[in-house]
Amino acid sequence: MEVDAKEILKLHIAKTAMLTDEQFDYFFSHFNSQSYKKGQVVISEGAKVDCEYFVISGCLKAFFINDEIKMYILQFAMPTWWTSDYCALYNQKKATINVDCITDATVLCLSNNDREKICSELHQVEHFFRWRTNRGYIAAQKRLLSFMNNDTRARYEELLALYPQLYNLVPKHLIAAYLGVSRETLSRLYNSHK
Amino acid sequence: MEVDAKEILKLHIAKTAMLTDEQFDYFFSHFNSQSYKKGQVVISEGAKVDCEYFVISGCLKAFFINDEIKMYILQFAMPTWWTSDYCALYNQKKATINVDCITDATVLCLSNNDREKICSELHQVEHFFRWRTNRGYIAAQKRLLSFMNNDTRARYEELLALYPQLYNLVPKHLIAAYLGVSRETLSRLYNSHK
DNA sequence: TTAAGAATGTGATGTACATCACGTAACCAC
DNA sequence: GTGGTTACGTGATGTACATCACATTCTTAA
Image (tube, chains in turn red, green, yellow, blue):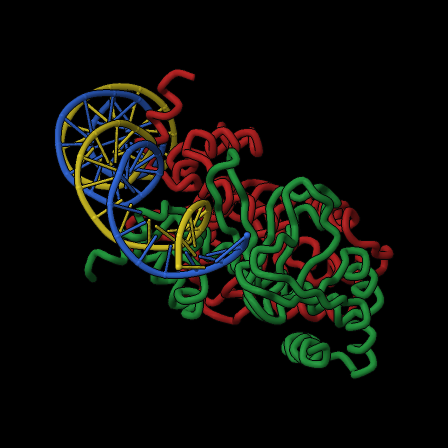
């Protein structure tokens, strides 16, 4: 399992950065493996945020709760995805969002300090994180556009096209929370024909 | 003017990265200064995207046109902001969004190739761009949350709190296009008391 | 100076959604 | 198995918004 996780991260990094085996081993030595049960909380609003998380297996969600009532999902985190409360992490603030596990999950944790340390020690690691964040930025911008431009049905179909696994993996009210509509509306949507 | 621009960029970079004067001069040598008139197009959909733009003066907008009808504004770019079609730029694709000038403007252009070149040559430059993108990512995520969570009035007030200059600088239908509502709705919104 | 085009206001009407309310079915714990 | 919680469907009603239509100013160019 440990070995698997290391291999998964290695392949993931190799797509963007060139690291020698020794460099990668050094890089990897800063990660801690962690296992969670379905429903377990990883980051909770108001708490201190120390780490970001690289998902090895399972599925997490990053979400915001408004007025203690409505939940909005910022991101589903599947294997090889990164997640955290980046706003809190990078600015050393208390968490404003929550992260928990939709299924049992294993992740690799990297602390903020260690990330900054290895980024300054290894230029290629800094390069990797620049590109990773870049892709995240582009994805967030696309989702923003989709929000403004498309109606709920189109966004629903877009989501399932992007993550076909999601339909069977997560309960529908979470999909609704990602799309930003009520579960009732989503239910009516895919039960009406077409 | 040239001197001003250089100084503005230098101060901007210094907030995130430590560059010696020679390093900064070298960095700066990759930028081209460019002036535009109000209404001039910087990037148009379907065209090749070569550069990103650092705004020295004036105000630009990055926007998407849907079905040749409705416009959605992704970003207003004010002095010391960066803008481009990053999706197209980083993936070497044709532009899917447009960028043009709301007012007369001067910018510093940096080509994709040159950015990658100086990023690999100067670790501190890579560091700068990682942080810049990071801030963009966090801002995009916040805006996404605001879209899901807040109604139009709250988003309108949020926008004006963030950019007080905007109210007098840009026509209201552009503010509506940023908020993702019709200009009629926005008009009714701030003309109804409260 | 004038004419044309933008930007803005405002009414009337339609609609996609939220919300509330209630019901049923599936899952889990003891 | 039984009771409790979670997931999910579906009707009725309300509302924030889009859309269309038209009037009014403000801007700009010839």
